[in-house]
Length: 313
Image 1 (cartoon, helix red, strand yellow):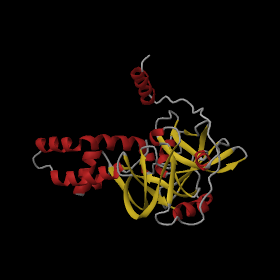
Image 2 (cartoon, rainbow, N blue to C red):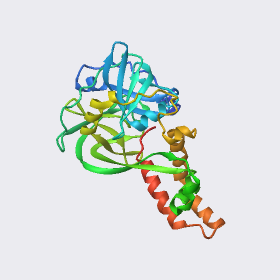
Image 3 (cartoon, rainbow, N blue to C red):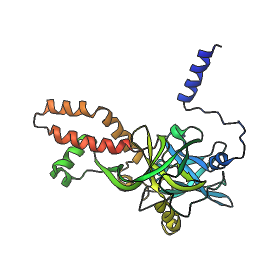
Image 4 (cartoon, helix red, strand yellow):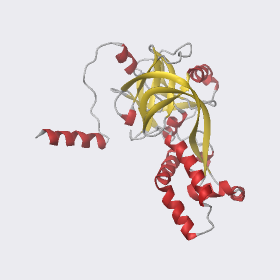
């Protein structure tokens, strides 16, 4: 078997989503310690999800910090995976203030991350540990940057008859089959590069968890993170919030749960539309000369920009 054949075989294995467990031994250094706190959070197929960090152990359980939108893939059940082990998600708790979620699993796995007690200094080192493309643990170095506001797609609301009386909402209902929900978050920039699957990745400063990746600017970009103070506040208060379970109709998805919709399904629908929205609008204009092309283009650009920031695989 020649080198080219071996290369093509390796690519085919990765593309099929089949991965071999990493049997390479590693020294017990700082990067190894961080890697042992890292997990992927996925549906049962292992093909949809993001990243997370182990933040606590119980006698026969673990707690995982990740994103609220990553927890959306657990709506019908899912699992949490280290590079060497796996556990079933039994419940999750959502932050009301930011894109954060804590998942409980039925097993003691990995190592517990140390949480920072103060915000990282501007331009200090930022080490992102996660699972881009849901690959084995990957570590990326960068620096903490400044603050910014970010608009992110967070789900779809069912269209009601009253919505059709508002021209903007009517256009959205026509184009998307629902009303896209976009949330503005206070955020922080890091210079480490991230990809789909990095949502929920912990970001460390001197070995202490100081932020959580939740957005980007496309498939390969610098990271946008939940700042330290939101992480700290959520970890102090999450026990006072309701713990939800997979298939809980009053849980993830909000209004979507009542209509049988899921965040992942809506995300796929809008992503598909965003790939061809110009053609869709052009065809609509040809069929109806009164179709509001400029308004439809403006709305589509806004919604599609918010979709591009979502890094769940």
